[in-house]
Length: 74
Image (cartoon, rainbow, N blue to C red; front, side, top):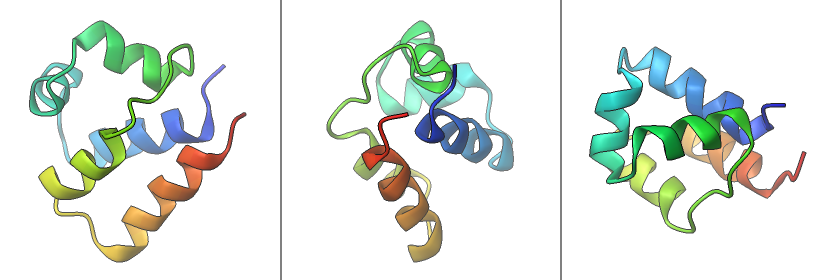
């Protein structure tokens, strides 16, 4: 079952009109690992949120949404 973070990550990817392949490449992780994070079956890498904020130039509101979602375990 997708986590809050997984849902936010997928929403970000779709909002940015980015394929899972393109986002995985930008984040320097495999497509399967990114997919597993989105689906909630893998742990979020420690630096992923910061990389997303930087690479996608997220505004403060979107950055906070991701940071809050990262702290929610379910």
